[in-house]
Image 1 (cartoon, rainbow, N blue to C red):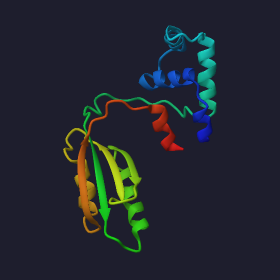
Image 2 (cartoon, helix red, strand yellow):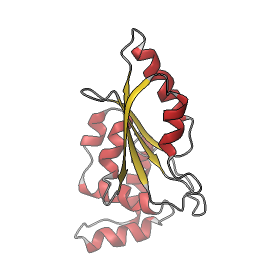
Image 3 (tube, rainbow, N blue to C red):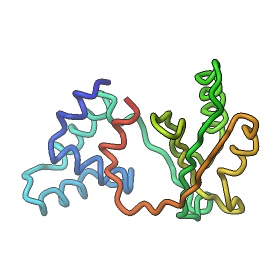
Image 4 (tube, one colour):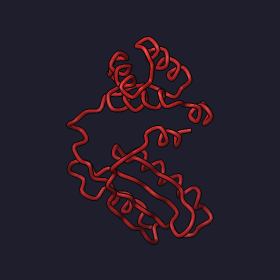
Length: 166
């Protein structure tokens, strides 16, 4: 799926995605009612066809259950990592990335330019106060500096965040 498919979404498609992101089981009839309140002239059938098109185009890849007792925390942290300069910096970054994505509470891992080499965003799960500490401990011989900061997510644009997956 190309980034062009995302950029061609109209307001109706964006609202459908937003509603389904809150509750993937929302009936198309309820979505149509919500969109009509916003001034869009759409029917239940139109919503079903649009959802089908979004699924076929790969914009909607699937639906998942979100379990309330699994993720009770709403605390996040950003971990900035600076590595020792070596010939195998790319290999080290890949090792760290592989480790991070194996953790059930990771949200994002990114290589960055400038003072820091990598950014890791983690959710503080129940019983794990400092999730970044495990990463720092595992790669302590390769990390020359790190910073941890708490994050407080207020608004997330799901459509734009999904562009990261392209």
